[in-house]
Length: 238
Image (tube, rainbow, N blue to C red; front, side, top):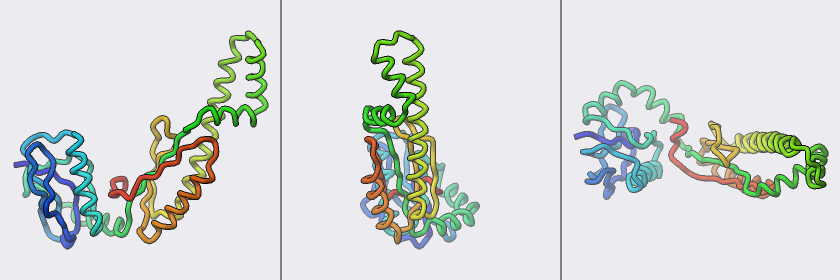
């Protein structure tokens, strides 16, 4: 029977897995497979596992249970091995790398920070107020100027200004939060977000980090939604 693999831990992790059942339509108990100094947290599966809501929740529940007790290397949803022997071989073959990553992540959790423009009308008002060129074009259009190029020119000007302002704000937010993180990863944001940041935050810096995020959220103007998610398993840093 195949194995669904949730995470890799040190052999001495408490593995409080009692009562946990795994993914799939016929859930099996979550258990461990150990080789040398490492353990993989697994459950038996007899079918292809698809990202259904329940299975996604189970996958995350296992990660959170493990993470509450000690450092863990979380695997992304969907990793399946053929049997215990294959998992043990993988643990043996990659032991040095897994152990190094466990040491690097020890005492940390991942946090996601995202920002999006919540009030586009407010941003447009700010741009028209601050940019004489944009304001002049807007006034010509509102005054009845029929030049067909004016709306296009104004739209391009506003779009450039929006991008520049959001890039500047995103860079400032990243720099303000980096002192609280051991590592960070920035990814291309998906609309409507203009910031997608993952931070590896040591537990001892958690309170200062949360306070810094809250302070930044209060300072931001212009209808920006500044969101924080975490603590999470450190997927982005494995």
